[in-house]
Length: 238
Image 1 (cartoon, helix red, strand yellow):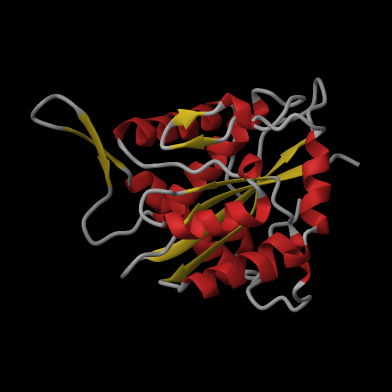
Image 2 (cartoon, rainbow, N blue to C red):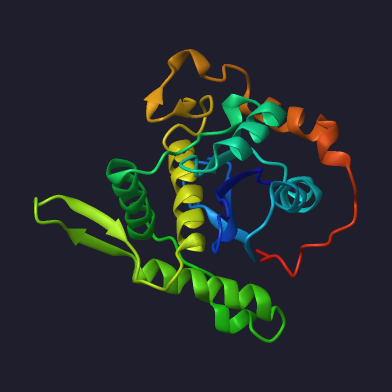
């Protein structure tokens, strides 16, 4: 059976905003076989407290799909990311601080994966059986299509979205894809270097067998809080 690595992108909720999570599964590298990430599931909720966001992650998603690598937005919600780092370790988490350079990197990563043949699940095929999931997927696609690249008067690039619209799922998708690309470039190596504020600390590289990290996470008592699935409308089946 092909081993799958669960790679999360997380955009935290702020006031009048949404908490968004996108999970891709990256298959084990086997020469000659498809090595593109597969969208497994996603979540989008109105503004949540730290406790509510942690419950969605640890009582639902992380329990069923133990995280192999997590790429969160570290720009304005550093406290929550620090909570995850304390629980799961720095080697499993790559915080991203948004600025023009990192936004450009994420857009380029998204374009790169699309040109390699990545495809979204068809929302229309999920609408009858999984309407919430279908709406989230269609919403995410719409958000990505609405992303704007603006040239300033100083001839610099700026990234934004239309006024009154949201891009939380688009950001979570880009973060997850970034994590997948970091791994796909080094499929038999240690996790990507831990980064903070754009600085790579090579001393933080995870030197053990990558699968050992998954086993460590599965043994983490925080992942065994409950077996009740309260946030699962459906998950995409491959």
